Image (cartoon, rainbow, N blue to C red; front, top):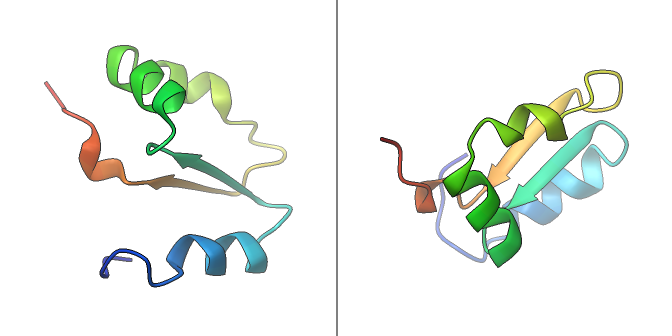
Length: 65
């Protein structure tokens, strides 16, 4: 989903998929620095039994090497 900022995309996802979604918000500095320095940590955060959907909010902030 690519739209302008502040249109409620994350809210819509969170409200419609409450139990099944893991939302990682890269505007939270601890999440940004953790995944930017150690992208392999993403795998540890996902519980396949609980997280059917994974959303990385603000993914464009990550630098891929």
